[in-house]
Amino acid sequence: MTNDEQRVDVLSVSHLKVAYGGNLAVNVDSLTVKKGEIVGVVGANGAGKSSLVNGLAGWSRGHARVTGQVRLGDLSVDILPTYERVRSGLLLVPEGKLVFSHLTVHDNLTTAFDPPSKEGRRIYSRDEVYELFPRLKERRDHLGSQLSGGERQMLGIGRALMLGPQLLMLDEPSIGLAPMLVSQVLHTMRTLAQAGLSVLLIEQNVKAALEVVDRLVLLERGTIILQGSASEMANNPRIAQAYLGAHA
Ligand SMILES: Nc1ncnc2c1ncn2[C@@H]1O[C@H](COP(=O)(O)OP(=O)(O)OP(=O)(O)O)[C@@H](O)[C@H]1O
Image 1 (cartoon, rainbow, N blue to C red):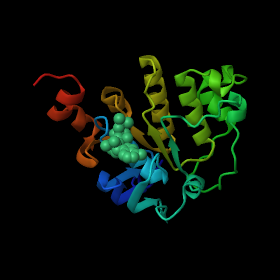
Image 2: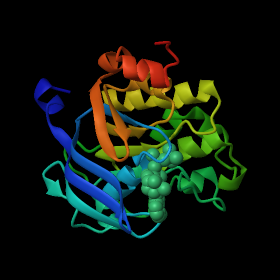
Image 3: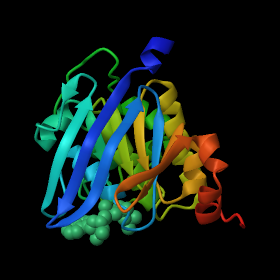
Image 4: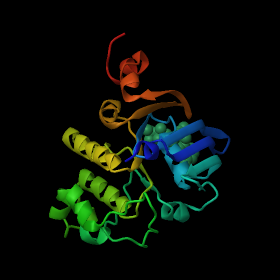
């Protein structure tokens, strides 16, 4: 990647609000992710992390009212329905992982449409997904329902990669995974980012997130209250005390 490419904002969000009834769950003035950058979003339970990525993807578990501007490169996606956001490369791997339980791993790794090829947008083949996650190749004939949490996680990411993401959003990829798998999945994100993928990573495991993110954002009651580079945030007393087990 050239320096010019690295400066480009792949995601830019302004004045994003997500409300359920009268309750404002997300109120983010500004958030950006650059090309090849991994931005982590952390915060306590109920801070609004899932509502944020669901709002960006254009879907919600309930009746959310979403307002604000969301741009993917030079495209305004906030006016688009979810499936068109997916087509344009805004991809969310949710907590449920979006894996088809009744299909084999191999058949799960089949795309529903041919993603439009565009410069800077890498569409991974099934073989490339197998190369990234050899475990999936070993389990290629197993049904989605027979996979472990970690394998489902890899499959969800693999399916997203085959749709040519411009921005990959991961909602709590480490949930329920053994520490070794957490580190494996997160370090694969680093490899993908080095190849130019932009990632918005929702994580409860702040320590694991800090090992791979370029920048970290702390969300509290839907608002960004702190953000900085991984090293700045790791040394921030508030993060250290609340999330890294340091003593005051
Ligand atoms: N479908 C819904 N209907 C009503 N309120 C909701 C809905 N989904 C989330 N909320 C509320 O919005 C706020 C943010 O929830 P959200 O799930 O986005 O937080 P989170 O940071 O992802 O939490 P967790 O880490 O526990 O998953 C919470 O107060 C939650 O109760």
